Length: 236
Image 1: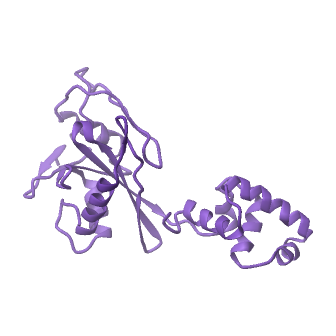
Image 2: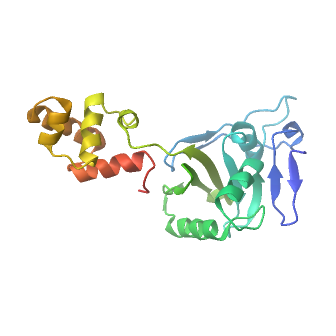
């Protein structure tokens, strides 16, 4: 398959095979800090020593195999789409028209655009969309580039985290703090947690203070909710 394939809807589907044939053009490295994760799309010269590649070619080279990428106009019309993005859309949105944004994703995109504000030339952070399916979830992030009239959608599939002591430790909690939070979610009192862990209630309260600080919360309920959000088990 060529590096770009025109489909009947007008969108260009990009694949990694033959990407060196994609037309080069001048561009600069773009760093996006307005999303939950920091994305840097680095513009590199191609192997023939020509001019730096286009934004689309850079996207394909760096993230095609693991993250779907879609470039849309402000109207939501698809300009470019990677094959991985098409696969993910087909998996999570049915029925749908191939190589186009599903209706529900169109609504989400327009809602994000309506909420978009600017501090100087810097756009506000866009909240990601989470869609769960059969133990996995699709995360859609919007990266606006209104100056160049391009809007990038990044689609990434991840396994759903379970609410367990090992996964709670991934949030920066110690094993004891994770154990305390786990049993809080099971609706156990401090006395009940102390009995399970074989420690005093005072020790449980000390662990609570520490995990409150790490999660930036003040209550047991808030601690559980923040942990669920950070694990991607509920939408923020």
